[in-house]
Image 1 (cartoon, rainbow, N blue to C red):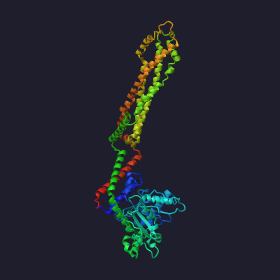
Image 2: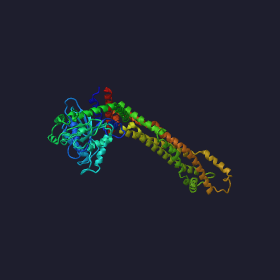
Image 3: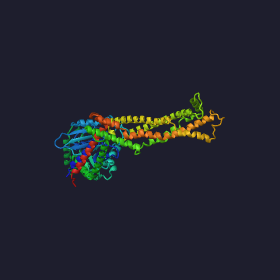
Image 4: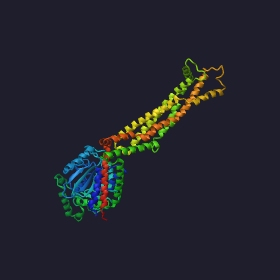
Length: 616
């Protein structure tokens, strides 16, 4: 059967681990912060100088909190009490000072003050950022207490006018959570109707189901008066009994009277008091600590199913996170090579998806062929090359001293060859355009390969290898496409020109007449028109063949052989070189370490809960 200590201690350990691992105060809707909020804790609420600090110190049994007039608690103090076995020495640990155990509680008090000043300065301002403190002692019960700044009604000199509302909002942010137990501290020498703690507790917990009323300073009430109406629930009824506390007097504090003597003095006060003697067994700081522990046990028992559910959900999220981050790297060279090849295959898979349409990007290559190439072909300056003046000049120069007899064949050839040279520009531009698309797809694929993110060195090597391969493919593609243009120049389609005399005859044998001027403008215009028709035929051909060459030399090779040379190089590397490639980003290594710690924590918590037979 689970003991009260084991139940509360388990929850306390989970809360502590959540705090250490940074899950406390996380993002909204985060499973980690949800787990923290699902675990019950006790918030200590009261007005300034209501005795909050003294109550906490009485529960802990140690003098460790800063004291003074006015606002002393200026940041929330998340205080986790851990009961240890045996006669171990009491010690404290701050979250911001990991690994340092403080056995001198005067130093604990000083560090709370110093850590507060680090954030707020030596002013009277407040901050919602909590200080986390754990105290380990065989004399405490397992509890998580949150000491909050004291509620106030007016801002004093040195404070912002909004501080009254700021403190109230801060307190409310803690106690409005349904799993927060409210420890409402009220001084007995003031009217309970004016209690700041009771007022705000009633607003968030109107039924009083999770509010524990604590009356302090019973020994400071005027003679002839008592607080029985409050303690017995007649003045203000709560679901839980009121508890009276007698704190150390200022004289005791000044004389450094220890807490053991103070607790004995408190017990004697209630035992010998004529007003409160009949309630002595339900009064005092020791009874309050036990009462809170008993209530925490009942709350935890009721919430075990939801806690287990949240732990399981957190474990699932952590395991998914570990899968995304990747497991630790093996020190075996063969395993390292396998890991590298596996990562490269993951990259190639995503790259091919971009090309084949599974992911965006491959359509940009088609756009080069369907829009950019035709547009570039249409913009070629054939009108200038085949202008009447240039045609006449080229034909005349080609004839030399011997004018052509029937058709200026050399002139035709020179005009066609000059026009065909313009196709080299669009051919090279298509190659370059596809090259840049492939480079961008490689970059995106590397970025989208989750497994690669943990290895920046391998990413850089992979990027360099792919860029080198793409450059080789580009050079081969340029050679192939320019060869297509050169082939058109090296052998003209004869059939096209054999049709020209027939077309002339159909026009009425205009060349036959003795009076026809073969060097007139009409003759040269006809030559330019014939050449333009031939160039148009070649343009249509290249519009279809250039994409084929580009796809064959660049896209196809990128799909089939992008990393072939890289794989060969990897097979030749030594174990140390392979390990260098798998050198992880330090931030990612730390992320995995923290994730593994969380996973270990929550699995241990689940196993511990499962191993306990809950008392009913």
